[in-house]
Image 1 (cartoon, rainbow, N blue to C red):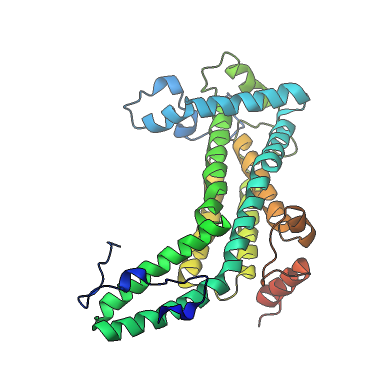
Image 2: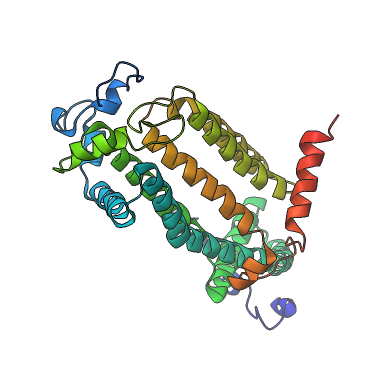
Length: 337
């Protein structure tokens, strides 16, 4: 009776072959009058706030080994290149994005493409499993709740087996988040330490002095705030572009995806006033990181780059992704009446 699913799934419901009683279900600062003052939290020294104080958790982070490592990376890049600090920050950000996050992003797309290609097989299994459960529920007199739990239990098992078979569990796609976010935090805190002199390094104060004259254009002092708000607003605009590009490529988003999209939009806007209250060195890093994120997002749409990274083709892939993106953007934001 259960062979209708074919030889790939010869025993779809082995545990259903029980007595009529039903199955056993498993439980499912520097000085200067002309420069805007930094907020109090931004100039507090690591040594002035104990671990039990109000800022103890942040100061513990600022003195942690990962942040010290980020400081060494920034100092090493500055010493090796001989660039002014604004150039060192840009170069370090680009290098980290290219060497660390771009390969991880390509791997994320690789996993998600394999998961997408499994959807027809998953739907086929779900259809046949639903039929088998319905037949067995009728034979054994199961309630709707028991039938539903049985369906969910075996569906989870079969989907997990597919993920193992193709080595593409969706959790693997989150590795980018778990590495990129901590790296972003550690670099940001390291730059905060440099900009405020809040560092145990003997070179900390000299780095602060270098940053005070290591800017460019309208932000020559990287330890001060950007009083023009050009950098903070640019961050918000680029982050919103990234969100909209993601939203435009998703057709028929679920309610959950829609809520997440609105949430990320709100965070992107909220980053503007936050960026206006931190030293320009940090804002410059955030801006460069966001710009590289936008570039990375567009690059991973290229059919040639996806083929180079051996990302499997999917039904949603397009031969003209940039043309399609422009058309969708024009239709949504420009031609809409």
